[in-house]
Amino acid sequence: MEFKRENFDIAVIGGGPAGMIAAGRAAELGAKVVLIERNERLGKKLLLTGKGRCNITHAEFDNREFLKAYGKNGKFLFPGFSVFGPQETVKFFEDRGLRTKVEQGKRIFPDKGTAFNVLHCLIDYLKQGKVVIKKYSRIIDVKVVDNRIQSIVTDNKEHMSAKNFILATGGKTFPETGSTGDGFNLAKKLGHKIISLRPAISPIKIKESWPKKLSGLALKNVKISVFQNEKKILEEIGEFLFTHFGISGPIVMDASKTIDQLAGQGKVKIILDLKPGLDSKALNERIQKDFDKNPQKIFSNSLDDLLPKSIIETAIKFSGIDADKKVSNISKIEREKLAKTLKNMEMTFDGLLGFEHAIITAGGIDLKEIDSRTMRSKLISNLYFAGEILDLDGPTGGYNLQICWTTGYIAGNSAGRG
Image (cartoon, rainbow, N blue to C red; front, side, top):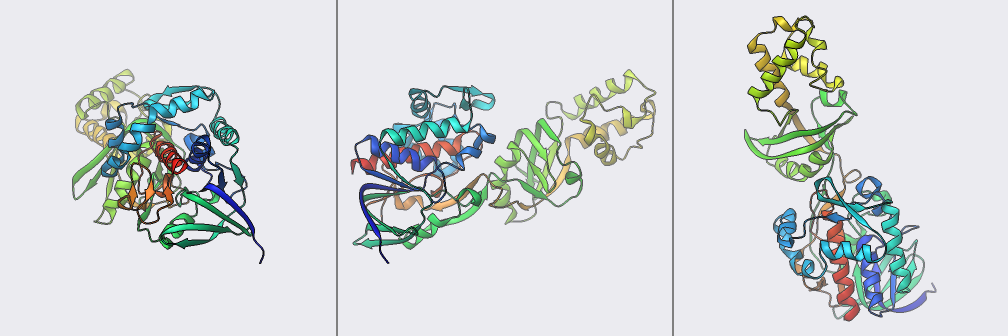
């Protein structure tokens, strides 16, 4: 078999956000860089972020506060954030003509345009550095000598050697975008430990049938509380969505990783509060005012001002009150029961929807085996890591893309100077 042989200073494996910014930064430093991508185009998963709008980062510019969102592993990012944190991310894109804006929840998006504009900005960065891009290329072999990668071989019969290599192949979520987990297998082959991989920021399956009957109903400013053994573990307030398999929406997705971890220790209950801004007493008074407006209305027609129409039947059923009863005949005890119902709609966790539908992968390369200042492997002297392949993940809101920008930039900067 004849191989096409090429030599580079830096070989970046993976053309997602981390790989692109790593390749661009290394090239900016004067390195001859090749970017290897298995898909037909770069940034396929990036185009899906923020519902196609790309939530670039989060407008929290106190690095210590920002890093709290990543839990105990967040401290790993502190050296990187001191060089390329959220402020530097915003400046990077705005310096290249992509204006940004802060929206609800401190989420930063392109001021005008979509994820395509973010991708084009990164592609221009690669062009400026004359990065060689190899598409439709998958790594099939790696040659290692004395704890250094000498060369890699692709399925296109290309044999590439380099001084330094950056592995930025992403996780296992949305495999149709190329995130199939191949990078984990490669890292494992090179001797790295992989922390157990799990879907994170995932929709949730529910055992009960009633949420599925409400499929498509989106709710704003509601609260979910997660309980195990009658103890409240966490709560989230925000947007919520009923689906044909259970529940989704930002507050569900953010809680999904913790819920899944809890499920390994026993039954998990999720309580939906439709009116978190009102305590039971205030909600009872609100219901009474609605009833007083038209005391001759039947109960089933009396809640239109309080609830979305599609959930009224379910709420009435849970309350146990006769749907055909006139509201003037509903007792105080029944009103209190209705108020309690609206604040305590109980569901039972039945699993995550899986890697195919999760936003990101939890777990990954053990951070103990990586130098946090450079992203360099402590096992393979010329190997660097960046992006979702690392054992780092955060909630929705730009936190996970910031991992890509920070680790990608640091890896490219370090490898390019190495």
